[in-house]
Image (cartoon, rainbow, N blue to C red; front, side):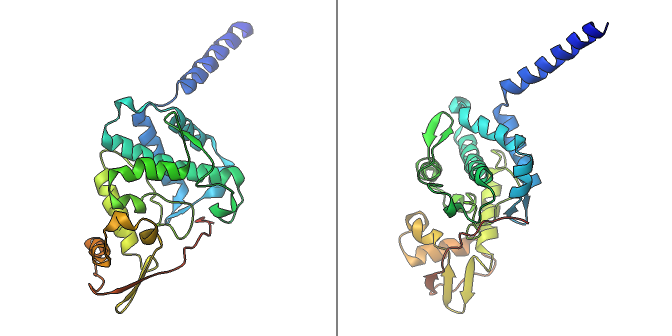
Length: 240
C-alpha cells in the first residue's frame, strides 16, 4: 500500500515538473510580469534584496523571454514584450551580481553582455535601439528603466498589450511632472541626459523638445526656456 501511494506521489510530482517545463504562454507572461513588478517595486524603486532571496519567478520570466516565439505576436504585443523583457533582464543582471551599488559597476552591463531574447542574441543596448526604438514612440524612454536613480521611476506593473497606450502615457506624465526629473527655475530648465542621448527621438530643435515635454506636464515650462542637463545619477534604484 505504501509502495502504491509512493508511486502515485511520484506521478503527481512528474506531472507538476512536466507542466512547469512546458512553460508559460504569452498571456501568462504578461499576467505574471505584472504580478512580479507589483510585488517587487515600491515607490518607483526595486526590491532587489527580496528578488535575490526568492529568484524563482524572475528566472521563469527570463526563461520565457529567452525562448519566446513572437510569430503570433502583433506589433503592440511585441512592444509590450520588449519593454517587460528589458526591465526584467536589467533586474536579473543586478541580482546576479547583488549586492552592487550601480549597474555601471558591472562591466559590459548594457553593451557587452548578450541575452537570448526570443531566440536572438542581443545586448540591452541592442534591445533598446534595434527593437524598442523602432516603434518611433518617445514615451518608451520613460518605460525602460536602467536600474539607476537617474532613470524614470519604474512602474509597479508589467506592460500589457490591452493597456499599453494608457501605460506609456502614464509613465511619461509621471516622469515629466517629477520635479527631480524636470528641474524648473524660472526660465532655466535642467533636464535628464536621456534627452541628450536620444535627442532625435524628441524632435530636431529645443522648441520641439519643450513642446514634447509640455504635452505631458500639468504646468508647462516656459516656451523660451534655456535648457541644460544635470549629471545622470547611476546609483542603484533600490528600495531598502
